[in-house]
Amino acid sequence: MKTQEKSYVAHHVDQLKPSGIRRFFDLASKMENVISLGVGEPDFVTPWNVIEASYHSLERGFTSYTANAGLFELRQEISKFLKTEYELEYNPENQVLVTVGASQAIDVALRAILNPGDEVIVVEPSFVSYVPAVRLAGGVPITVNATEEYAFKIQASQMEAAITPRTKALMICSPNNPTGAVLSKQEMEEIARLAKKHDFIVISDEIYADLTYDETFTSFAAIKEMAQRTILISGFSKAFAMTGWRLGYATGPKQIIEAMTKIHQYTIMCAPTMAQHGALEALRNGRSSVLEMKTSYRQRRNFVVKALKDMGLSCHLPGGAFYVFPSVTSTGMSSEDFAEELLQKQQVAVVPGGVFGESGEGYVRCSYATSMKQLDTAMKRMRKFVEEKQIQ
Image (cartoon, rainbow, N blue to C red):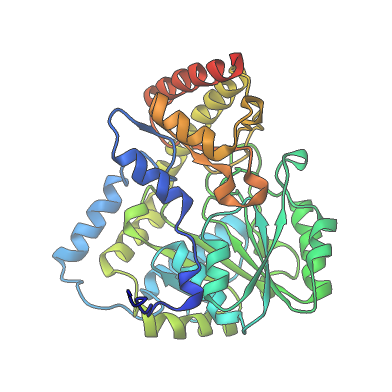
């Protein structure tokens, strides 16, 4: 009789499902002639002046640790940037933490504020890491569904219904991944009213803030009286095409940022030094590159949304990020089946909406952060696939 092998993996980790995005990425990587609309990664190379600044950092011998919170120069530049763009005031001494990507900032923020059993409201469809990150931090994720009926924006009444005495925080992402929805200032003020009334913190993931196309972006921390109860998360990956550099940051109330820094110093020590010098250059001299990429993304967004509608798929116009989230319900398929069969028959990789939460079922996420030539071919293949399904 075979003895059952003992597992040394913690129960809460053992129960986590692997990322649904990663599964499709792995499937696509084993096939030939695949056009991937699956991964949220710019097809642009990091601007040359940023790369050069990182080279020079190494050439000048900056190969040691920086301060745990990051280069003071970089924290000063982040503060200056947030002041200029959003009229936010953060002291670089103790209200800015440089992290290894925005993902680490989210993880550290949750671990810094949650006691076991504290609840965090997560608006779905959401980035795949939010719910697992809450669980790993000992919290309880309470999901609230944002639907296409309201342009994938959460309604205040829905949110209020989810609030309990154990609610510690709300996680929002605007512009949103995967829907591209952008919260208006008025919608943020409604959320702020609830946060003050029920005394909870808002973790605002603003990694796509620079990629807002049709309206002026408003930072959640800029809403009246919200700076003292908002942890602002951002980074350099998306706007500056620096995904592989893994550099993000968090700003917020001194007490919380200092708590986050304690966890960061014991687990990471500091973000990579040469990447921090690259980020410094990006903030000082990289804005023109961001605007060029943004112009290109806007053109691609318009092209893809029109192509999807022309093939008969319902698709709202996303206000930001670089994703579209069309409905595939007209094909009669689940989002998982649609994505898998599209990949197998037409070699186009998209992500099934269900991996972003219950309300994502019936949709797929397509990233348009790839060239127009690739997008054109992908849309033609997808149209052929959809037409065949609709004839059946």
